[in-house]
Structures are given as C-alpha cells and as structure tokens.
Image (cartoon, rainbow, N blue to C red; front, side):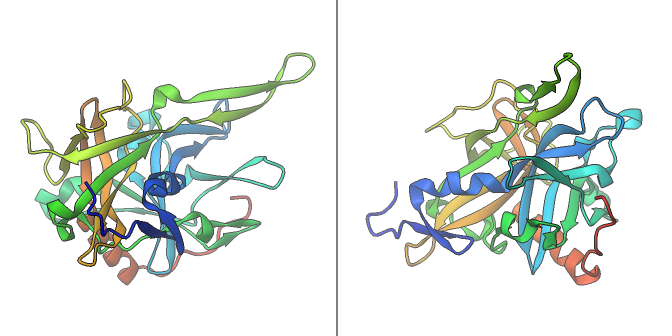
Length: 282
C-alpha cells in the first residue's frame, strides 16, 4: 500500500504523470524487436522485445543477442530495426547507426555477452529518435530501493505467438504489401529467490501474487525492460530500472540487473565515439 502522504505524480520525459497512469505511459518505450530482411517473405519480422532509451546524451536500443537466432538461421545485428509511422500512417523501418558486440574477459561474467546494444542518431530523416527514447535515471536500480519502498514492478513484452501479418492484396489477389502486427502484454512482477538451474548473474522474478496474469507462452519477452516504481525519502514516487528480461518461461522471468547494464553503458560511452551518420537507404 502507498502511504497517504505519497506524492503520486511521476515525471516521465519531463511530463508529470499520475501514479496509476505510469505503466501505460512507459509502454511506448518497450517496442517489438524487428529485423529487416530483403530475402524474407515480408520486409519486417518480429523476434521479441526491445527497450528504447536515452542515456548520457545518446539514444540506445537494448535487447538480447540470442534473439537473433543461431547458426544458419541467425539474423544480422545490422538488420535490427526500429519502426515509425509517418504522417500518412505508413510504417518505416530504421536500422541502427551502430551496433556493438559486448564481451567480458572474466569467465564468471561471460553470459553478459548476451546483451545487444544498438545506437541511433537523434534525427533520421523526418523521424525524431530522441523523442521516442525514454530518458531514465539509471542510478535508480533495485539495489538503491529498499524493499519497503518498492511499490510496483512490471514489464511489457511481445509474445511471439501473438505476432501476425496483415497481407494486402491487389485486384488479382496478388500480395503486394504486408504489415506486421505485434501485440503486447503487461506482466506485474516481484522478486523471487534462487532456484535450481537458474543461470548466474540474473535476478529471478515471478508474477506478482496481487496480479499474476501472464501470457500462456512468454516466448518473446526476451529483451523486455523491467521497470519499478519506488518512493524516495520524501515520499515522492519515481520510476526505476530493474533490468531487461533475458530468459522467460511461464511463472519465472530471469532479468539482467539494471546496475550491471548501467556499468556496461558507462564503459561503452566512455570508450566509444558517438555513432556515425547512417548510410543512405538505412
């Protein structure tokens, strides 16, 4: 329960949002992860979830590398795509200005190499990437929020079995266009203790007992951000970043911790120049 003295307006990208509306306001920053393919039956294919955010003056999209598949079926990281609709409602895809393959020398940290990071310039043609990214204080992780000040935790994901394609046919019933449809679902979460076969370096979470609704098959939640709402010492509510989901099965979600992700991003920004302009046609 929230204390009666809690300040219930939460700032999201400079706008004060009522506490109850905060989850819905954050949903637009969890996007379906698309990949562009010239050879595929459609231009875009959905392969899970991704988080679009702004940190230290730069725009990033974050998901997990295993979402791209393995072996001969593996998709190229360069084909990762964010989608935007123009003023006519037409869907356009933008590839990153830069992608980064993360690696860790210490064996105990090797599985952090599953993180996939893409960077986008502020403006690409008529599209404002900066305005589509969530400005979030990454200092506010679960480690900084006492358990009794943690009031709500949730994620949005795009189950793969909910993805569909809206095919457009011409007068001769020949397919001329296809619009991919990705349906999202929100899941409220709570922390759980370790269990047998849990992978190291990840926080286990389960559906919140107060609202345990979840998809029948959460395949596609990999890459989804996990947010929480906490109260500071002045009882002001704020949005924190718990991490991103790396593995999901019904009843249990494994999450890369937001604290680790912040450390990765700080190292990246400190050592990499801003992303170069995109090549023509991307």
